[in-house]
Length: 294
Image (cartoon, rainbow, N blue to C red; front, side, top):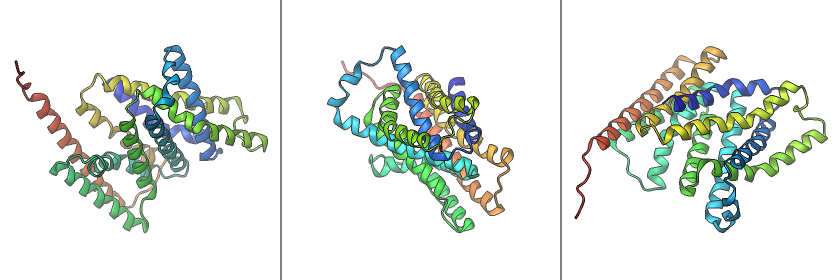
């Protein structure tokens, strides 16, 4: 429980980390995050002596293609989130992570042919109404929120299909993006537009992006195998709550009365989703085991 909570707190506090790297643009920060994440994951896999799978990964073209696709979507998610935070749109980014579980449920319905309970349909309807209301109030759709929910939802779908352990998957995902990311950083350095050498502190912050990317994944993986799914399901809403609180109280972003009303619809949808999820998990855990045939 503590490990899972810590993972989501770290993900939430990244909202305060990315502004420390300004005036570097979002694309440069993203490139550093990709490269240093790959370096950190490679070190971990080496320490664990878990490198033999690299010799056979080319024999699994479907898995490799899925992980490359997953890398593209998670890279887009990272970049959009960094851009949103440093552009003063933290509250809108939080909305994206509130609706992400509901978007994932819709993906399961449409793509995986999974069934949705009535309570889940109500949750999706409430959240959709909130997003539409926000779009009407702002005069435009909340593209940042929609983009974050969509990219992370599709990323989760690709990872589900790939079915590979987290460390190995992250290694392939970041490796797929590392070449263009490293090339971009080299171009910035050659043209004297790089912010890496501005100061030792800034360089350390850039290098640390690999650690802050991998550490919450380790904590989450530790929690996921030791904590009931009901708890994990509830913890996932901790991230956007932290983001919203930081954006509203810490960074003093504003939200209109109508916008706050729209958020209430989204929060209601999230609460309904959590309640129905917890109830269904409790029923499953409370059912007696099926009799075994002799």
